Amino acid sequence: MCSSDLTAPALLVLSALAAYVLATRLWGWRYGIVAAALAGLVLQGAYGSLADGRYPDLTSAYFLITMGIAALVSLYASPSPRSAALAAVVGASPVLYHQVATLYEVLLVVLAAVISLPYLLYLRRRHEALVVAAGLAGLTALAVCYGWYTYGVGWPIASNSASSKAVSIVLGSQPAPSAGHVIFAVSAPIVWLGVLGLALLVVMLRYERRPGPVLAAVTLIAWCLVMYLGSRTAADGFPQRFERDLGAPLAVAGALAAGVLLKSAWQCYRRASVPRASIALCLSAIVLAVLAVGVITTRQLNTETRPAKLLRPAAVAAGAWLSAHNSGGTIVSTPMNQGITERSVLAMGGYTGLMYYSPGKEGTARSLPASGVQPLIDSQHVLEDPVSCAAAAAISRDDIRYVVLYRDNDHDADLVGFQADAARYRRVFENRAVVIYAPRSVPCAG
Image 1 (cartoon, helix red, strand yellow):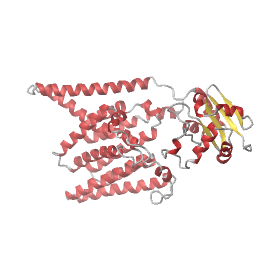
Image 2 (spheres, rainbow, N blue to C red):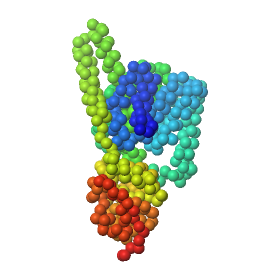
Image 3 (spheres, rainbow, N blue to C red):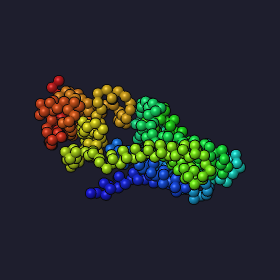
Image 4 (cartoon, helix red, strand yellow):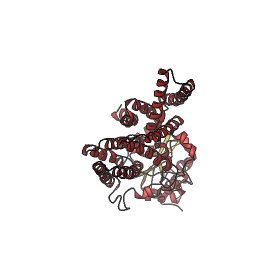
């Protein structure tokens, strides 16, 4: 077993660790343990994240962004050159990892500046405001440098970066989910505990006068609001991603709610003078919360202890053959099965194209490659009508070296057409699940 087989699943522990760090920084280690449990067991399952290919998004949105907020809270609590440098370095790191997390970072930095600087200046804490401004300025400068390096020369000033086209075509292309869908995307216990925790933060703001805790609470509330509002509009291009990543701040806020409920129950148990009605109400809330969390946790653990295989051995063998015979060019592949796209085949073989979309999907801008719609049309010509002149032109134009066909998905390709035209398609690999053809550039008969 290679080291990546162990490291990749272990990376998901970072999500729980980040929730622990932030909640501990805000309210203490007991709340940190609750936040880690919510983030690690209730919010997200390790196997589900692996199956859906969420490693980059989870690591950036659930770990790096959360750690950036924790560094910002430390900067608010004790403004100093050291805490400002820490906030700058940690806060800018998501830009290196994920484009959508970069969007989160931009929104959160703007909010942090709008919230903290006027508030500190209003309190006449000019030194603290200067240190916070320096930290945010350093974060912005590092983020711009990271973005310039990662996404291409010209970003964000010019529009000729390597990813500007890919980002622009998805704006407004994904419909926002319904208001109640957040319960399914994040899980009901996280939503209800998170909402209760946010309500407790609002109540706490009425009695808190220290700048650090006030800014920390407002930042957490603003983080939740930004993620929720981002999930309500298609203008940002990623409403479903905003909705799913809302779970990170809600898990931390939910830790406050769960901790307060447990603490209240313990105090009611120790004090004989507490009315029975209050004790019953508190115990009922705790029992409901424990049941809701327990059901989701049991379901997650059951999924993770009995995982299904993502890739069959036959598909892995085909991917290994493609990797060993990769001499450049591109390939075309049908999807493996529902939920696993042809991108897996491209990755195993070390190729970057061509993508294949089912008929009709290329008419929408969602997730189209930066090269445009033409490669998708070419892949459709090759798979769906392999003996046509359009397919011959696509093979020559895109330098297609191999065509990968899955027997289970015969509705995505004309298998008979490939078998009938042996002069154009030479079979080079075959097992019980996969057939690979090497196309030849031959003149089209018309």
